Every structure is written in C-alpha cells, then in structure tokens.
Length: 106
Length: 275
Image (cartoon, rainbow over all chains, first blue to last red; front, side):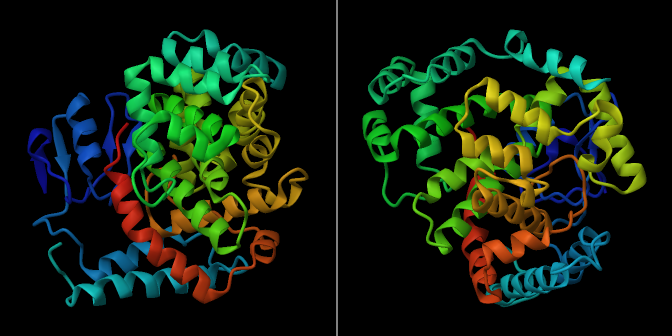
C-alpha cells in the first residue's frame, strides 16, 4: 500500500524499493524499516512510500522463506550454499517458533 | 576509465569537500606510524562529538564487550592501538557511508558482528580486530560512490537489470572493483597490513597471503549476512561462498546455527545504532 513518507514507522516493510530523485535505489524492496531508515527516508526528497500492509512486526513466515529462496537464486548449485540456505531456513523458522505463532507481534 | 586515471582520482580522495574536517584530522593522525595511544586518547578527548561516538561504538554490539566502557582512556587501554585505530576509521567512515548508500552502514555493522562471532568461535586471539575487518571491508564502495556517483548509479542499475552483484559489474565501468579501490585507500591511509589484505581479497579470499584466516572470515560473514537479508550493499542476491573459506574457517553446522542465533538480537540492536 502507498503511504506518505511522513507516516512511516519502524517495523514496516517496503513493498517497493525507495528511490532517490535520480532513480538510484537507496533501500531495497522488502527491507524492514528501522528507526534510522525512517529518519533517513524522511530527510530524503521522497513523498510516497510503498509498504507491505497491514503492517506486522514480523511478516508471514512463508513470505520470509520465499525471500530467502530469492536471495539464493543465483547460487543454487554453488558448493556449500545449499547447506547455508538450509541453516538459514532453520534459523528463521526457529525465530517464529520462539515467538509461539506464525505471525507474532514483537 | 583506465586503471591509472582511476587510481590518481581515488588517491586525491582526501581533498574531497565532503570529507569532514575531523575525519581529515583523524586520517592525518593515524597516518603517522609513530603515533602513540596517549596521543590518540588525547586527540579523541579534545573533541566531545568524537568522544561520544567512540564510546557509543565501543559499547555497541559491533564489539560486544560486557559492561559499559565510560571513558576514552579506559577504551583505549582495553582495546590497544590497532583496534582503536580501526575504531576511529569506523567512526570516520560512518558519515561517509550515510552519505553514500543507505543500508551500507547496516551491512558493514552486520559483517562486523558476524565476523567477530566467527573469530570468537574459532578461538582467535582478538575477535575485536575481526569486527574492524568486517566494518571496513566495503570501504571501496564508499570511495567509488563518493568520487563517481553517476557511474556507480549505473553499476547498481546494471546489476539490478542483469541480476548480478555490483562486484561483477564494477570492472566494466572502473577497470577494477571496489575491493582493489578499497585496498588503495587503505594503503594510503596506512591501515594495518592484515586489514588491507581483507579489503583487497574479501571476494577472492583464497588469494590472501597476509591474513588468509581473517579474509576468509569476512568473506564468509559477508555471504552469510546477505543470506540473512540484513542491510544493503548495492545489490540483492547472495554471492557464492568460496570453497577455500568454507574449509579454512571450518565451522560445523551447529556452529553456524549458534552464530546466527547469537547474531540475531545483536543485529536488531545494531540496526538502531546511530553514531
């Protein structure tokens, strides 16, 4: 969803990358906004931000795992990368289990 | 751009108007090979902003010291010359990173944290040095963006279009990569030899002669951090891990999982760290 840059808060996740006025990507899509990023975006000359909504502190687990797959898309066959991806997947799943639900509030 | 032109232009980096005066003083001071801990301590203490940044950095998850360090003297005594030099460089490049690429500071801090945890797991003597290696490994990107913002924008655009990493695209624009450019600057600023090697070879860790283990750790940390999806270093995919680093660092699967677990809260804390 589109929201005004002045209304973004930490914990929101970008649906589209934030670009500066020259079109340089400043923050990638799917980045979770932190206090610092919010401050930075608000200092930039950007009016509208696309964030995933309605916003939760942690996105659904399947989205998070799909993003993990996406990040590894170019190294599927490289040595050891399958192991690293498996460990990261277990790690991320563990974070959700620790919270006791698939989509917890932090 | 040919290599010589690039090198000449990179080496005049200190005359850039965007480099703050205090950073110039830091670089001058640290460039003196005979500088003592006492001089560094005095220099930091004279500047309240620098003092507060140094203390915030020392007490951050980048270093992970238990308990609070509340004075510059204490920090300097505890950390020793090499680490304090690295710390000052880190504080100095913070501003430059913030100016150049959003997310690069987070990427660098994340690398510092993972490198330190890996070094500690390996039982290396000074895990704080690994922090500095992780923190400064991408200094070449900072310099390239500062010096050539338009060209670097094209590099990032091409990486995005062709689904490559910026490292793979850079040579087409600069005849070399941020790793080599970073090493030039590191030499010019008289960084310690192992740090120069880490910067030069963090994408080709098997070529490191001076600091093979340190370089392998930062390379591994870089890959793992991108895998975790923390920070932004100019592109969106994970590069392959060089098999030599897997062998050399030699962490077991449970080791890696425990490092990821330990890093999680530290990364979250670091994401909120501003200097």
